[in-house]
Image (cartoon, rainbow, N blue to C red; front, side, top):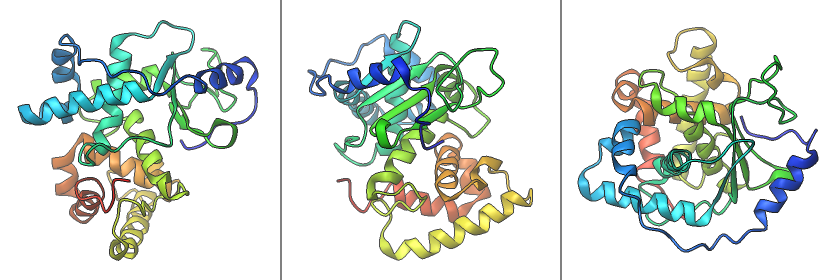
Length: 260
C-alpha cells in the first residue's frame, strides 16, 4: 500500500508531526549482542550472510535507527520491534554502501491492521491495511502493522514481507514517482525490458497463471514491491520460477546504478 488517507488524522496527525520535529542525528549505538540470536532465527537474509557481511548488516541497522524515528502507537515499543523494522530497511539496500533513506523520517507501528482512516478498532471490518508509505501531509512517514511486521519474518514459505514491501516503495519513489519503474536503481537500458516483463507477468497473475500473489497485479508500483518481497524472501524459488524477473531485480538491488 502506497498512500495514507488524509481523513481522520486528529490527534494522530499531531503526534506524527511531533515526531518529525525530533532530531534525526542521534548518536549511533553499538549493536546489542542479545539481538544476534534473534536475527539468526528470524531473518533469513541475515542468516545467509557470511560473518563479515553480518557485521556490516548489524552496523547498517544501527545507522538506520540513529537516523529514523521508530514509534509505537498504543503499545510499548520493544527491542524486537526496532530490530525487525531496521532489518527490513537494510535488506533492500544492503548492497548500496552507506546509502540512507532520505525520504523517510518516522516509522509508526500500529498494534494490528488499520483502515484507510488510520483507525485500528479490532471490530472494524475495514481494518485490512498492513502497511503504508505516506504522501502529502504524511510525506516521509511510514505506518506498519506490528502483526504484519512479525508475520513477515515468522512465515518462511509465503514469499511475502510487508515491511520490506514498504521500504521498496520508498526506493521506487526516489525518482519522484511511485510507479514501479525504479529509475534510480535500474540502468536506462533495462527500463523497457522491465516494463515488458512486468506487464506480461501482471497479465499472468490476472489469469491465475503465476505464483506471484494477486496484489502484484494492482498496478506497476505494487508489482515491483510484491515481486521484490518474493525476491528477498524466497530467492532460490523466485530464480527458478521467474528467471528473467530475478535477473532484473538483481540489476536493481545487487548492481545499483546509483546509491545516491
